[in-house]
Each structure stands twice: as structure tokens, then as C-alpha cells.
Length: 295
Length: 262
Image (tube, rainbow over all chains, first blue to last red; front, side):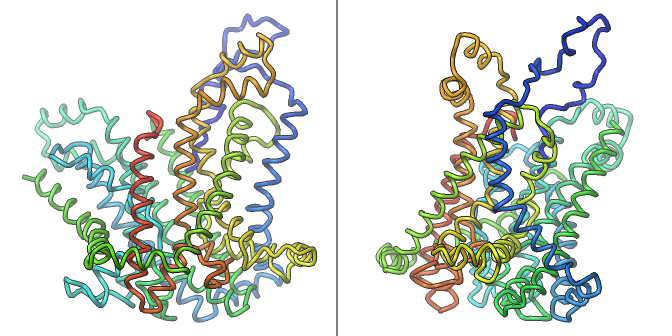
């Protein structure tokens, strides 16, 4: 998500030939002329920042401010309110489980999409993105059709924690697949062939050669699935029944507090969720850097 | 052997998580033919919900397209202090729960907040009305156009733009005749993503809408409302309509997706 494909790549700082013409700045990788910000640029920048601030930055800052303005004790108390704490526990637990399942299943799906050839594999590839395209409330309704009271399989997960997990698995399906797939496509198969020819079994080759190359992408996909899961609302609303202390997830708890006019409590639970999300994102960033340094 | 095992595992997983549930909804929707579906979707409430949804989506797409192209040009073509910060902040909405987006907007634009109170005294109600729902939709779909356009703009380079500039074209002419044609497919890709997200947004819109039937009810809220009121045919019909829009947008994005951006 933090797709910083703008200017400063690793090549930008590479030392060039020393005999640069003195009054010309060193040529940059993209051969861009460094412009002095003009009036037009300033105006455009101002508008963009204003738009972002009025809709995203200022409102989010107010949420965090509202949660913290009465001190950390009050914040902690609001988060530890039994119903909110139960909702947070369920959300974090279910999200961790969902991330783990995605880590395994997502990698296997990516593997099959890249290495296996069978009729219809292209259709499967398109299908993977369906959960991102489908509105979350529709996702919930759709799952209830198969796993609800009228289930043709006679599996009723409505109003259960298992139902919450299934809903989260549905909406997070693409993350690991889409992060692992490109890495797998680019993976050099010579190393694998070498391992095989030296007598390594399929499992040993996978564990020692392929897995270390995929690990950063797998972790990054699982991390994104986790952050999406803790934020999820729409898909869990119908299938979970929103029973406090049982199937109520954190986002539903936040909405409940807004509707009962406890805005400060809602802000506290929201801030707790934001803190967890950013901690995970920072961790992911570190993993990526570590992987890049290892080559 | 292992190969076939994995293939079967993947197909069964996707079948039970994705294909059968979605197929089941479509099947139940059309089980009694097209008549009840059309009837359900032409009720006053449903038509109003479609109108509200389209209005909100149109505003959100226009807003985010202008912001998205402008910000992409700024991030790729210009240097200014705080550029990396702006680049990071654009992605912020992705990490935020739609519900928190809604709460955040209520805290600033609600009746009891300073800004919202001032707007209300001047005759503009934001929360529990359309402007707030537009803001919520913009919030959740904000990064989509920027992130679709920026990499293509980067790849395009600026030789042509500079040539046009040297030949005496104004900045606006250069932008309209060189930059826009260069990014048109990426732009279309971003707009489709943004439109699909705007049409399907539920959480953020639900929080700021106040769920006033016949007033602030979008199509996704209509689905929930009908389902909770045991009107399954209407809920299924609207859900299938939304699913069809989603599948259509998915196929469109597959066609438009810039190469090398997988």
C-alpha cells in the first residue's frame, strides 16, 4: 500500500562522474529539471492539502484528540469497558487467526495460480479480486445464504464467532495471493532445479529455497489482511448478529457507542484500533527493509 | 500427486468461500423469475436509494479524480518541502476503518461540533444528510485515483511535456494535450476503482447517514434495511444488482489495468 514509486529510488543518490559542470546540478536519475515551485504549483499544492486536511487529516486528528484529551487513564478506562474490551479481544483474536489462515491458503493459491496449468485457471485468477470489488454488506449477505439459518449445507454459523471468522476470511482473501503472486512469478527457477539435481526432495527445496524468498511477501500480505480485519464492519454486521460479549467486533462496538451518544468512548476504541493498525504497518515496513537489506 | 492435491484444495476453498455463496444469492434472487426482481427494484424506496447512491458516487468520483490527478502531478513532477509526508498521508484512508472515518466526520461536522454547528447555522447540514455521506465516500476512496495515475505518470517521463513547453505551449495546453492523453488508461482504471468503491461503500456512509429511509438511504443501506426487516426478496435483488456492478467493474479494471502494475 505504501507505494512510494515517486522520485527517490536507490539510484537517485548514486555518485555520478566527478567532472560535473560546476553551475549545473548533478543529473538525476529521471533527468528532471529541478523547478522552483511556481505560483501555480503552490496553488495546486494548497488546494490538495486543504482537501486532504478537511476530509481526512483534521477529522482523524479530532478522533485521537477526543480519545486522549482527558488523559491516558480515562482513555484506558474507556477501552477497558467490559463490552469494548470483549469486542477488541474478539477482533484481535479473529484477525490473528484470519491472518494465519491467509498466510497458508493465500500462498497455496498463489502457488497454484503461478505454477499449475489447468483449464479455467485464468477465471480463478480474476475471481480472487471479487472480495475487493464486492460491497461488504453484500459479502455478509452472500455468506449468510450459505452459512446462515437457511443453509443448504445445514451449517449454521449465524450469530457465532466462526461466522465472524468466515466473513473476515472472505474480505481478506486477495491480500496474500496478490503480494506473493508477483514474487513467485519472478522467482529464479534455476536454484530450484539445482536443488533437485543435488538430490533435495520437493519439501526440502520448498522449505530451504522457495520459502525464504516468499517470506517477506507472505508476511506483508498477512499483515495487510490483519489490518483490514481489525477495521472490518460491513461484512460482519449481518452474519454476527452483533451480540455484545459474544460476536460483537470492535467496529460494531464503535458504531454502538456513536448511536448511544457516547462519542468519547467511540473515539477511545477507534484510537486503540488505529494504534494497533499503525503498529502493524510500521512492523511491516521494518520487515520489508530487513528483507531488502538481505537482498 | 502433490500438485493435484494443492489444486483441489484451492478449488474447494474458493468454491465454498466465494463461488457457491455468490452463486447462491443470484440463484435465490432469480428463483421466481425476473418479475419479482424488477418489482423489488422499482419500489419507490429502491429507486430513491439508487438515486442517492448515484448522486453520492458522482460527487465522490469528480472530487477524487480532480484531487487524484492534481496530487499525482504534484508528487511526480514537482519538488516541494513535505513531499514524502504528503505521499504517505494520501494512503492514510486505507489503514482506517470506514466506521472510524464516519466517526471522525461526525466529530468535526456534526451539529454539536464547532465547525458543524457554524455550518448548520448557515443552513448547511452535513451529518445525517447528503454532504456528509459524500465526504465519507470521498474519505474511503481517496487514494485510488492517485495510486492509479502516479506510476504511469512517472513512467511516461516529461520529455514530451518539456518539448511542448519549449514550442510555446502554456501549462494548461501541455496538460490537456500531452499529459492527459498519456495517462488516460490509468486514469480510467482509477476512476472505475473509485466509482466501484463509492457505489458499494457501506460502513462509513452508514455511520454518517442516520439511516433515514427515503432520505439518506443508499443502495447498500437499502440491502441491510430490507434484510433486517425480513424482506429477503428486495434485499437479495439489490444485493445481486450491487454484485453485478462489482463484477462489471472487476472485468473493466482487468482490461484497463496498466501493464506491469500487477
